[in-house]
Image 1 (cartoon, rainbow, N blue to C red):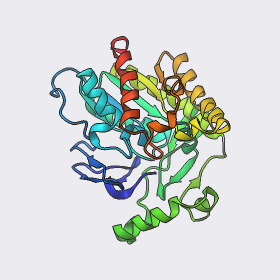
Image 2: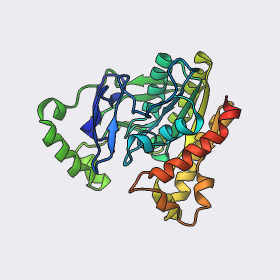
Image 3: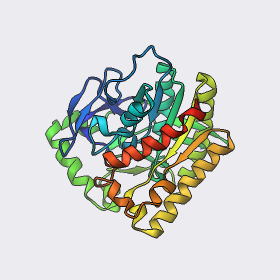
Length: 298
């Protein structure tokens, strides 16, 4: 979920972290957003010491449910000794992830862009509203994608309701079953179910172009919801969707890291999560997988 506490409206992305924010998440985990609108990875190499690694993605990249120093981008910075920028944003679809990667790569010219995603991010590309906020979406025009829904309008509830009331509404709506969330307009569909696969595969072409434009290496990082480790039927569908994305990336010559095999050998993979997101220990495992691949990616 994308919580209001550290977010602001964005005309192109729907919403993004508030630059300069300092506060805490629902259970007290500290959140620091720097002046560029990215989550802090702590003290690292000086900005001038080589080109940075840019991490983009959803709540698994942002590091929902853990403190600043416990996210995988922060732990990757410590393991690698290289500057890492955490551009993850909770609740993003794969379309928003790619758009934010394009914006941040242009601003920071990283050496490597790591685009983290879960299978649900592919399904989120089918929506024009998520978590009560309108978002950009892509229209499919033959073999091409056309960005639509921009500029993204400011949510009516954000204009009218005080923050404390918006927060209570979010808490109530997120607890509803998915069909009721659609009834109340918390999520609004733009494309039929299944269309997100075609959109996501075409969006990988944009990541390829990003890499060529900025002369950086692009890496697709597949992560997984904890239900994958306890529900075989759910796991099969999640693996199918992530597999489509990773296969397309590899076919275009992009690098990929699939975290599934490493977690799957653990006797209790679900124990690497707080609730629905990775714990410090789970994020450490992701960071170590990426750190091991950095020599070849560089």
